Amino acid sequence: MTHVVIESCIKCKYTDCVDVCPVDCFREGPNMLVIEPDECIDCAVCIPECPVNAIYAEEDVPEDQRQFIALNAELSQGWPSITRMKPHPEDADEWKDVRDKLKYLQR
Image (cartoon, rainbow, N blue to C red):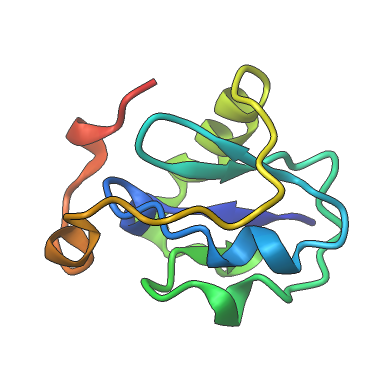
């Protein structure tokens, strides 16, 4: 099993989770983070760190977010590793409760 970043992260991209990851499995895209599934050790320390509840164990991903399992695997292959927390986007708080953000995902 692995952990998965879902839609809530899009346009928020808080990076609190990357500081606690013991295996550096997060990858950074233009407006979202993803988890490299082959590197994730399923430790779950990242889950409580996410201020928008965007990280789930694969088996717990909500049904309407299941497409993010494959999306994390795909995007993690081309996006660079992120290992340290960075400032979040200035408008992140405005986006944190917005639903249906997949259309805003920048690859």
